Image 1 (tube, helix red, strand yellow):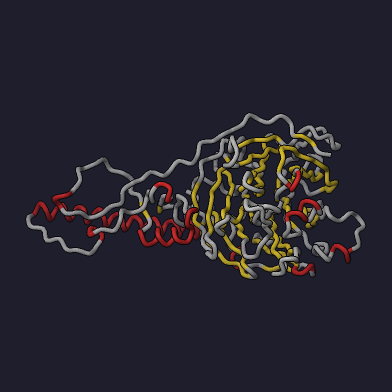
Image 2 (image 1 turned 45 degrees about the vertical axis):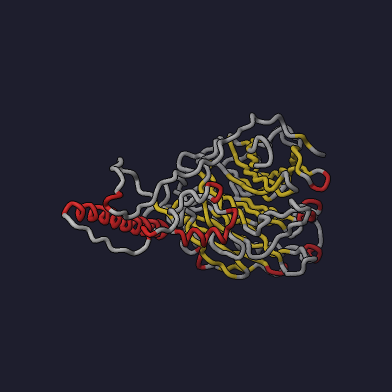
Length: 491
């Protein structure tokens, strides 16, 4: 039974990101061409032309306005004629000697050289400070310590991967950063987007996901968040107007509760088209975004009680159990990960009714998580799926869980080919803030993209995010190897 969502909240349209200030670089010029003295400005630092061209070649049309890994270097986008880069290479950038006659001329040159040296030393010092931020001396100011984190991504037509990371600032406002990872490239280029004018608090739970379908949802990024113990969804879609729409998905569904009121410290999780939250009774409630013919998104929501009782404030995850979107939707090929009241871990698979023989389930999903293991109350965790084989007709996946153990470090639990669960402690997760959240992104899939083609889940596209000394660190899982990509440049 489908349910039409209650009356929409007033549409909220936020201003488009404004370009970063275009500040000129510093260059040495002959004394007879010195500019007039201007008020002192904070120096800006830019990528060299060679670095810029390198990144531009890799990222093509997706090259955004960004900060480097230390939050210092600014560049512009091709749409603004490479705004923010150094001027074209000219003789003033080549090594040359100036023979200046006269004390006054020498003094001018000395001043210019001194300023240049000061900027170079300042840049070096700031780079050292930026590296120190990830190693323990200082951190960013626009993300709160212990912030909730959520990430989602998709592969564009040109092969680049676009990801969004959502987090909270010290005032409790929801912020987001966007990255582009070039095809075949492991590094990410980031930009910080304008703060979101959404009702939130320091404890707001966040759950991001991405819908793909045709040209109207190419993509639609959805952020689900909690406000006043209700679930709201913010939809970001540049192909539709308004391009940011807020919807209350909590009320009026008559499924055994008068309203979807979230419990204390309750969390959210999402993977399109599903969202889960913990009701104030302790049960896990699932919200489905209803899909029409050919699995086209609609404006309707269907809400149901999964009749699962979780630990109060349990972290939640949704993980696909198929690489095929049609199976994820029509065959309920996904799992809901939660912490049980005894602090153990469990995965609920809606595709299998109670009493389904283990042999049937083990063809597609791992065995029951070991009862022997328990975890700290409300421990942070994330889940993602990796296609099991290279056979295009094989939609099976392996499930990975990243969860904080009693060692206060993140462990990775995985089950390959539906075998028994195994635990490992990758080096990339060994230095983690005690109150850090964890977010991992499984890229979006669809039965029909902008070209009418199916987009299945692919290998080597997983990214996870956590805080180390307040700084958000990005790590990648490619094949069987975990690598540290670097710090996410949040100012």
